[in-house]
Every structure is written in C-alpha cells, then in structure tokens.
Image 1 (tube, protein in one colour):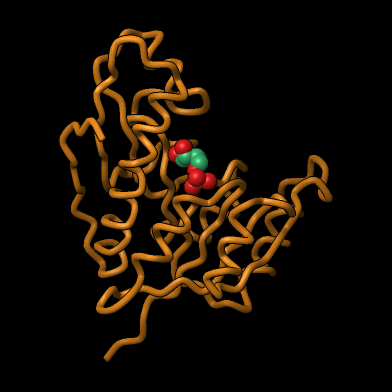
Image 2 (cartoon, rainbow, N blue to C red):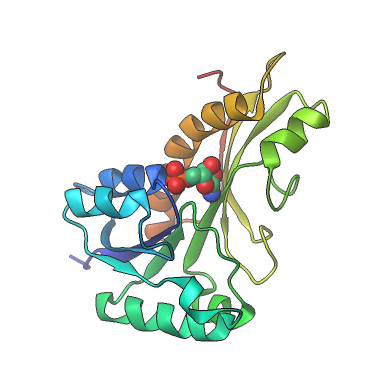
Length: 203
Ligand code: GRF
C-alpha cells in the first residue's frame, strides 16, 4: 500500500478552503494534510488548523521586507520538516517567484475566484459584475511562474444574478470553491490531471 501523498496547505486568512481540504482527506483518499502554513501570524485559519490537530507554521513575509527570495527560503525551511509532496495554495495572498515555483512545478495547486483565463489578479467579482457577465466562478490550476496562469484542473460556475454585489457573488462562488478544490485534489493526488467542470449552480 503506497503511503499517502503529504499535503502542505498555505493560507493568509480565514482558511475556509483549507478546512474543506483537510476534512476531505480521509478514508481511501490518497492524500493527508501534514502542515498548514500562513504568511500572516494571526490568520484565522491557523486556529482552525490547530483545532483539527494539523501542524502549523508561520512565516511572516513582513519580516523580510521587499526580499521575496529570503521569504521563500524561509518558506522552504518551514515546509521541509513536514516533507510535503504537494502544496495547495488556499487563500494565500503572496505572489511566488519563479525560483520557488520551479521547485514545486507540477506539485502545487491554487484556487482562484474567477473562470480563468478571465479576471486574473484581484477584485475578480467586482470586475465580472462590472463587465455584465452572466456567469462567474472559480478555478483550480497548477501554479506556474505566470500569475493565475497554469494548466486548469477544475472549474465551477455560478450565475451572476441581478443586483449582485461583489460580496454576494463571492459568497456564492465560495460554496463552489469548497466543492471543486477537494474534488480536484483527490484526483490530482492520484496522478489524474483530467479537468473537472461543474455546471452553473445557484447555491
Ligand atoms: C477565496 O475567495 C479564495 O478564492 C481566495 O481567497 C478567498 C478566501 O479563501 N483565494 P479562504 O476562506 O481563506 O480559503
């Protein structure tokens, strides 16, 4: 019986995606969470990880100023003892350089709250509403050096409803993030990169 894939989850905030990923890695799932790491010392997701008995690490990017390489070296050192096979970025709000990404290419996933390739970067929901789009959603992709640009592994769509605020849309999309990310991770950890598409769902 091959050992489980060891998964590190990187967060910056509340960690709702981290919680659903951790909760999904049970039973015959081919992976198990081994560490939750945040660049923000007080991130709410750290307490949730501790409650779930997952090891946590903090690497505060602020202590490295503009030196991204130094931050990423510290990141690698904090991850190493946990021997991760895969990294899941889940609400992780730091851009990673080519140096870090190239060491994890093909072993690092991210969830982005838009239907990539549309709306890379920030404020995705406001931009989709502003553009008059009828559908929005989220994307799980492999991380490459170009921001929000790697091979797409899963997407889930939601309708944009009349009168939606960006907050309304974010809440609707977040429900789908919690569906698609665990589904993709389960396949990806088993070595299956076939993309998953979830049709529009209102809730
Ligand atoms: C989510 O909208 C996710 O798409 C983005 O960060 C937000 C918060 O995620 N990457 P979480 O609740 O911290 O998992």
